[in-house]
Amino acid sequence: MSSYYQLVWRENELESYPTDKLNFIFNIINRPFPVSYRQLYPSRIEWQKAVKKHEDLIKRVKNIILKRSDAHDIRQAWLKHHREQADTTNGFTIEQLANKLPHMANQLGAFMEIENIEIKYFDDDFKPRYDLSDFQDITINNYPSSGFKKNGMTKEAFLKLYPQVPENKLDEVLDIADCELEKEDNTVVIPYWYAVNAKRVLVDGDSFIETFDN
Image 1 (cartoon, rainbow, N blue to C red):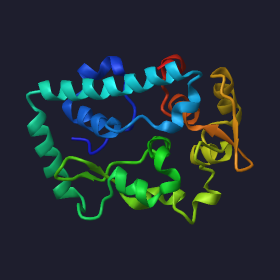
Image 2: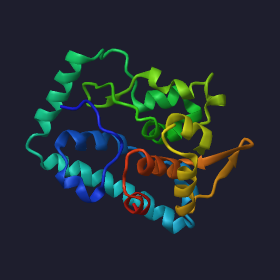
Image 3: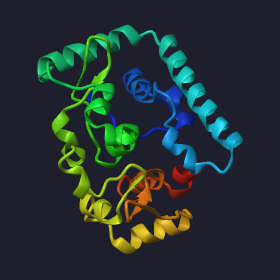
């Protein structure tokens, strides 16, 4: 059994996913829709629709899991797997990471997707826990020069993470997606929503249309 999944899934494929992946998805999305995403929606009504869609997704995933006959067995398998193969004493939950990294608390999901952060293990409450060392790029000391900001990341930081991506290809994807670069602390950044989706297209090989239309 795989110990983690990347933060990528399709809502129209949820019913087909194995229960362990659904558990992972649920633990990732089971939190309020980030307020920082408000800037991506042109009106209050569109924002409210997005929030409701997020809440409905949480309920839908939970209901699918509850209907699975192997839900309990999957949980026990996860716990057994990680007790045997990982140090399960010093991992951090998302909430603990947010407290340690308050300057990036609202963007941890985007950072984890962009850097492909793995789950270290699941605790007894089946909460995913992570290795703090995987977040070195955004610690207080490294954050100022990391290229990661509160609302986005620099193009240089993206290309440093993925040197196999030509700069002109990144520019092309962002241009087709109608991405407007923003300025934060006198630094030009790619908003996280666009950076994450650009990574999915250019690195993970996902379809542009399906990625940016979701």
